[in-house]
Image (tube, rainbow, N blue to C red; front, side, top):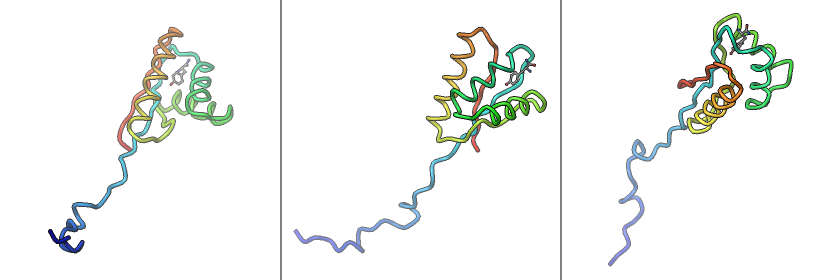
Length: 102
Ligand code: TYC
């Protein structure tokens, strides 16, 4: 059996083109009950923000209704949402965290 020259088996460029994986924004939503200090702790613990940035993002959510906490590949974004939601519920707060395609 003869080996085919590679130019005869190479797929079309369009078939092999690799798209970058889609990214997802992780969002925090405002509510009337979750304490501001708790939201700041969430942003520091799960999104690795310093205090100044965490306070700024918390206040953006408080005044504007929502803010982006970070942008990640899908599985990492989903893990952040799950971790934040579990942490909030375990502490008795209704804090809402969601994700949407960037
Ligand atoms: N609005 C809340 C309060 O006044 C604070 C808050 C900020 C809650 C951000 C949720 O994602 C949030 N205690």
